[in-house]
Length: 97
Image: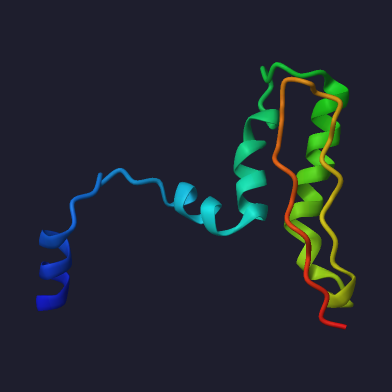
């Protein structure tokens, strides 16, 4: 209990800290999902074709680690059909073969 009280008094931070922001700094997959959440909204400023591309992109992000062979994991191709959305490139996936 002392440690919790010490931590609370020693660090000032916004109680509304969004854990998604923290996670996105640690994981580029989560970051890409967060940055493209809005693409699935009905009034997103992108074409229906782009919405479908981002839907597939986000699905691949979520499912990429469910591959039978973990050594075959790869990043999905970042959609380029919506020129108002710019995602940073993914880091290389380190091979363990």
